[in-house]
Amino acid sequence: MARKLFGTDGVRGRANTYPMTAEMALKLGAAAGRYFRKDQGRHRVVIGKDTRLSGYMLENALTAGFTSTGMDVLLLSPVPTPAVGMLTTTMRADVGVMISASHNPHYDNGIKFFGPDGFKLSDEDEHEIERLLESDVMPAQAQNIGRAKHIYDGRFRYGERVKSTLPAGMNFASLKVVIDCANGASYRTAPEVLWELGAEVVPVGVSPNGFNINEGCGSTHPETAAEAVVAHGADVGICLDGDADRVMIIDETGQVADGDQIMALLASRWAASGRLKGSALVATVMSNLGLERFLEEQFLSLERTAVGDRYVVARMRTGGFNLGGEQSGHIVMTDYATTGDGLVAGLQFLAAMVETGQRASELAQQFEPVPQKLVNVRFGAGKQPLNDPNVQAAIKAGEEQLAQTGRLLIRKSGTEPLIRVMAECEDIDLLDQVIASVVEAVEAAT
Image 1 (tube, rainbow, N blue to C red):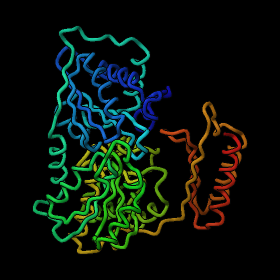
Image 2: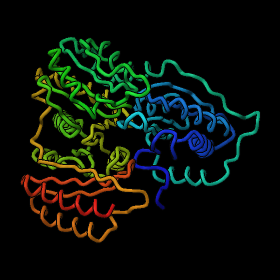
Image 3: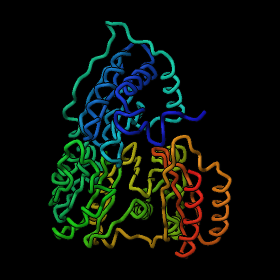
Image 4: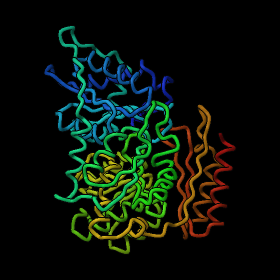
């Protein structure tokens, strides 16, 4: 059964518009509370958020929904998404919630759920919550209504965990680091952690006002950090997104390294030290063909999944792998975290610089990417362009043209009304031709 409300990463939409309304958040809280409250004992949920103005509204509504079913609520205030996964387990909570639309603009928001093990929910769990949403959730009796409590040291607990992922005694006293926090959830945590580890810190995107999250900064706009790296003569830049589960690395020249390059570096280093479980990296269908070829040269394999870091994590768990992620910058290291953690990935890159003595530019470009082009086509309500015969014919023709030299990937976004048309090919003219043909057909069907 297809999920109606949940997308590839929780529930997401424009703030104060269905489904991101206070009313829906209250219902989601009640349904999730009922689902995770398995018996009559005390149960708890931890709730974190990023810096969007709408986060206050949704936080209050979720709190009302959870407490109405007898769940105690622990409010973390702004913390990175991976902190919610971590604190769900360390605080022995039954469920965790992160209020964030990740890399999206301030006017969007989202609600992500974590199970008691700190991992994002399965499709089956989300189906059950949707089923409860469609029924009348029985409220708790008056004497059993839950309590809400603010937890003020959540980011400090997370910061200590992050630092513990490095070898004992390692410090970054030799490095000047630009850290771009996207005016988001990590705006205090990330600079503090880097400073405590000895780095000279140049903070960017650390003045959130409720509206400027991801605005001209962060992992979706790495040019801002790149300018700061060059202007300050920094050794490296770390760009996080609004909820700090993504990262991009900037080398000392201002060149940007995406998630594929970071994963290539980590996979190579981990394999050399015997740490890479299964001799494989897990990534999505969006990862560059160059990454796959790079791994093959080192006798490592690439396990591809559907787009979405939770699908990456699911494959890692079933296959016993410990490294995975997405080209967009989600880097998942299950030795350290239950979800993508941009700050931990950034620290791993800094550790590689310290241990090898190499510059960021020498580490950040592990392989030559195959030319890749992605075009997003927006479609209207009620439209299903991928079912159109002309679109299907254009896709088939494109696949045949690229069969020997590249690949074509067409998918519907799980978070926005977009058809994503992506192709890879070393022949740039052929790449452009195939993309244009498919995009034209999709646009005609929208």
